Length: 218
Length: 304
Image (cartoon, rainbow over all chains, first blue to last red):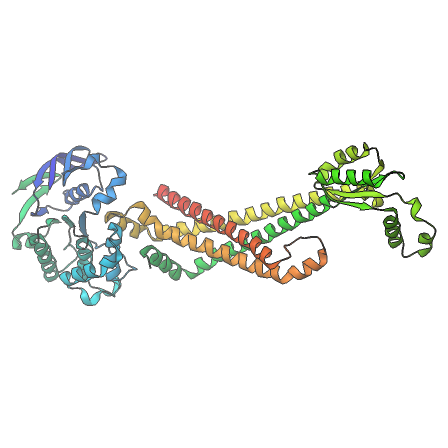
């Protein structure tokens, strides 16, 4: 599914990633761990095509990221679900509308939206909150809106960048359990986190990165 | 309703004063544009009326037979530059004279039909044909002399009238176009400002949409829809107000100008004319909205 081969990324003179290589197979659940500034988010941004590598090769679902044309990037991203630490929900839209946007982006006919939205909101436990605005939700609920939006397009790959960073333990555990459930349905999940309690509790494959270099990988 | 329309309606509802400002400026622009278009149309009709009005009178020799007169009349009727050929006999000429001098009947009693020559009167379709036609008619055997009806009031004065009308029309056109141009530019700037503000407010939303795979067209669509709403609504409202104003004043204008067709006299013709104005203005509104919004979006992108 994902293949990093000798990937290097620099921001000016600062090396964010140095000679990083790993492979993630389809249907895997992988934690990318490491301290803040280690390069976890950079890896996710490279997978999403938000950043381009300075060296090496990144293959995602058979596509070489380096050869991806600018006009093809949106269509590439439509196949990937993304969950962020700061939720990135649209503040002026309701829960239902936030999820709906993702379906509009992929161009799904409107008559199919309702069924998909109801299904995914039921999955994340937000059925009752469908008409609420983000300002009326808790942190955990916001993260589940973000997750619902990522899942509604039925992505092959789910990227989560510190999804529990702003949540308490119980809520974090609930969110990661959702990721686990989604992974059990056959989707590949890559979650960047520095929350060791989560990593210990959910025994998944770990790629540990420090100062832009991989120190351990299962 | 399409998601882009819903989003655009949401933006408009959230910023009613911006929406009002944009619609007001665009309405004003198209209101003035419709009035200027009407003025240009009316002045063109006025010029055409005066240009085609001048009559040429070919005074015929006294001994001319009816067959020769009929031949020349037929020849003139076939000439594409000439219209409304009419034969005026000596008696009719006297009658015209008497009518013209009705305020002084004594003048009419002093003359007999024999002193007035018979004539062929006709108009030219365009003033520029007049001289060539006059020269040609002068060469006819049965024609004694050729006069221009304007000569009654002074031949040069008619030309002066037409020249003056042309100058006025030119000023109306240039002034109108300049005024509409200035208002159009103001509308464009207002649209630019509003759309740029909208883009700035939407920065976070645009970033999120980018991350979830929205195409640039998807991101631009609600902005363009919003600009289209302002432009098309402004164009329609401006046109409607000016149309109502013109409908209200049309009877007075028609009475004032008499037989000069400054506006179509039949209702269908008037609606057809203003239908054309509306269609042109809607297209102009469409172009204004598209260029304004795309330009604003590209400017905001560059500034990032």
